Length: 271
Length: 253
Image (cartoon, rainbow over all chains, first blue to last red):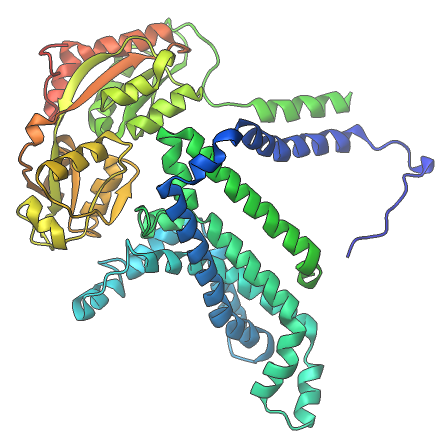
């Protein structure tokens, strides 16, 4: 995983300033905002601020939506990853490119695309509404849909990577021993790729927790229904900056936790 | 020394900021005037900006439009700003000592709008009970007023979403994503045929009071004063009236 530590031998000379200076600037750029957030946070009032009903409902909603999104990503993404890794379907390259698009799509554009397809006047949204009276935008369902749309590619890519690394030989061996494809997948492939799948799940979960643009565009902003933590931070910053800082701090803590989990347990599986 | 050059480039990149750092405002040089204004002022201030640029060669007016409270917050955070115009007085107070004394310059009132084909069949506030409608966030004046109007009318219906500012509410209505939304009369005027108006009883008694002030740390103090004078002057008041604004509460500004 990590290359062996190299020692700066005198023969190599001093590290050139041309490389060191921008590196230091990069470190400052990356670390300073975090230091700023921590230093400006109202530590003493933290319990009181986080006890605010709006903050509580946003936290509950965010955690619930992130978990639902992660579960959906596993249920839908694992079969797709398996298809991409193990089955010869025509036009697989195109399919892979298509399902990766939301990964690089600006989140707001993702929201607009969801409105155009599932909004009240959308491609599928309009018939849905006329036939069943179902409207998707401005509901918690819309939040989960938006988050799954942006998080699924993260999961699929990391699960597919794990499936490729696990190799097909085991499948072949299982087949010679009389296991069908489903049984081989369940008892042989899945345990092998579990670390990669877990890492992908965590990535999807973290991506959902930080989602802003697609949520506010497609699901709106209403406490308890669609106001997730990032939306709350955005709104609170206008009236109660302290509440925004406190909430940001919680999100920062969760991010650090996710990073820790990934590094400790599963980062190797992603390689 | 290449290293020095690298440091300089890196520093320049880090400290680069938009706009001109120069002050002066003589009008003979290229300067930018940053006007932060409530999003309901979009059309009227854009028209005034054209007049202002014509009267002051070399000056570019940069409008930053959003929710009043968000803009006030930006001023206190030290965003580049010369003038702040809010749709309510509390937001102006939020900016505290970062702005000079504020003057009221216009009023506005809330109205309920629906898409022109009225999918929700809205003819009064009571119809909102089983319709999808949106308002501004309650920290924005348009949201606070909408809450007050609903409360006064005894309507307990809740919006499906609270949008960041009034233009976002209008967009949700004109795109047909919702049955109705609370916007200002001026937004309804600007939207023209795209929306249908539903008068809200009591809206006239709850006007949104607009205030304008120069920012204490303005980089272009003279131009900022000139902008405020334009807004309070005859041409400015005419442009505002054309957009559907009412006169300030205490008569003439």
